[in-house]
Image (cartoon, rainbow, N blue to C red; front, side, top):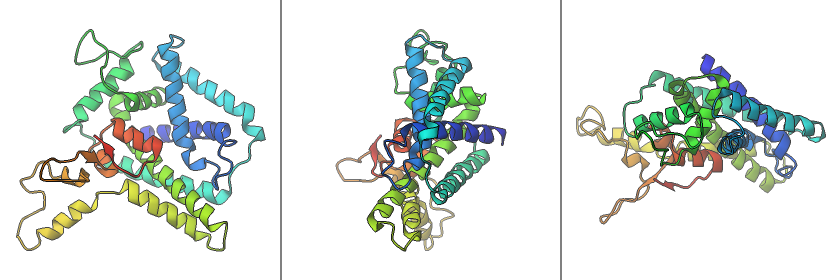
Length: 297
């Protein structure tokens, strides 16, 4: 609970700082960019820390992370008085969506926090290496004397917030995944909300933008989850105990978009990446870019 609350508080602060800085550019949107402010705050914070570390201005440690956090807050304070805030309804709705998604996935990870399959051991190694390397580029924990030869933006962002929240890498691994899921759901909700609000022109159907946002979040964050349901329905007449009996890679098909006789296209969906707790580029890109289509694995 402490890890969840500390992450929630830090993301809220970074989101508020980012909103104060970006709202002039997004003021034409119905929500003035509020739904993406948390993601932009985390991304800006992580990239600034990465750049400052690469230039040797700060070290890759909690002190350097707090310095960057202070700079973001100071920049927001200089502009906050001249910024208008979105309506109460969109703020409350957005916060409820984020809290529900973040809290719900945190509860799920608390039930199954083990790092035991597919890319998880590598993910935890990379996150630990990024968190413990004193300088840039981070050292490879599995290849002594070499730097990491892998894309590590997602690990860097989680490690950066882990510095501020004073959480160990193995804790940030699970809480960070839940936070990424919460920001993904919130961003998709904001996308649907803004599109529906702009199309309706502020008509009498005030519930329509909220419903559109909920549908967008469900379509992206919950994509591919129907595969297991259809599997259960398919074994009803066969007498099997479960649709995954004897199939250790039962989750693979639910993450594929296209399958042909010549080759299997490897395009992973959002839900498969989060269910397998992959802190990789696809999960991070989905969270940051809000792209509802599949990405190459």
